[in-house]
Image 1 (cartoon, rainbow, N blue to C red):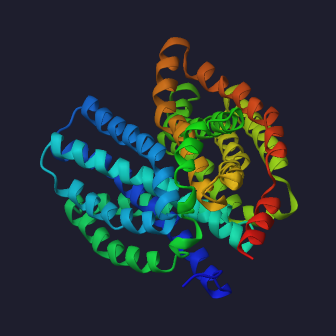
Image 2: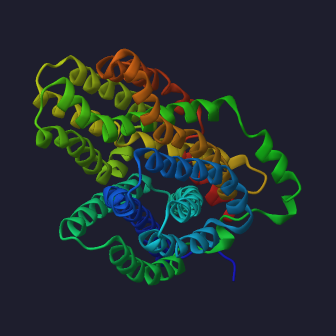
Length: 412
């Protein structure tokens, strides 16, 4: 009992938290990939599908705000182990649910657990990063992207061969539930990042007071990054097809280019971050992403638009992992301890940031109805330049190596 984790513990925890990220991406992609099947099977209207998506997003964001307290009190390992196994079970329930009300209730539960898992897994990744004294969070987000790509391909395949959603999701749950229990056992012990209970009375006050201008700025930057990702996912194909005359196949390649280039760079992002500061990664990422979007909206050729989306994905690949890492280490002075503080700051940051991906597509659609999709996508360019201009705030935050050293000194 007690003591610092061994080198073997840290290696196991690094791969375990990476698997958590990949599993999360796999689950969400399988859910999204079968949305057309859901609509057709139960004869839902577009409005009903919109309501289901909205309740999922809103409950996820609401749950993110509460997760800091849970993770600081009980530890990120305990929270992850509680919420991971029910997620594939809920997915199986969605596969066999017979009506709109049941589907909506299951999406509310799924969204809430996803929100809790998203915060706790990022908090655990920061804790492992701190203990290892090396960057791992880009690799974790790369694993999420790879899981999402695999999930999307699997969903498309089983839909093509006419496997029902019920069989598809039940088989997936049977494979993932045991894997969730095995993975949870290899995470770092709960004692590593739960709050010091002698400080319990001071922690709620710290949570309430923690909405600092610095954290709000990070949240705004993260929301811009994810709004751009949402634009690429939901509107890139529509833009190239309707505004640039692309075929449906070529239009679909826009998001493929974005996602593949983003995933490829995330795979080496941790090694890049050893040599390049978080501030420079964010500054150049915002600037190059703005250039990529400029190519998209200015080029008359659809194929060059695909290239522009690919450049944008490449540029933003490290932005979100870098922000999660820096924000997590902002909690170093939290009264419950550095790692408990990571959960608190990540909880708040996630609440703001994921509003970008949940609300972004709807806002883009609304603005596009007013001014057209070309001008709407063009509005992302100054926002991305603002990300580049605001990167200096990362330089004024506590550097990751300082936070790591401080955490190590405390455990010693």
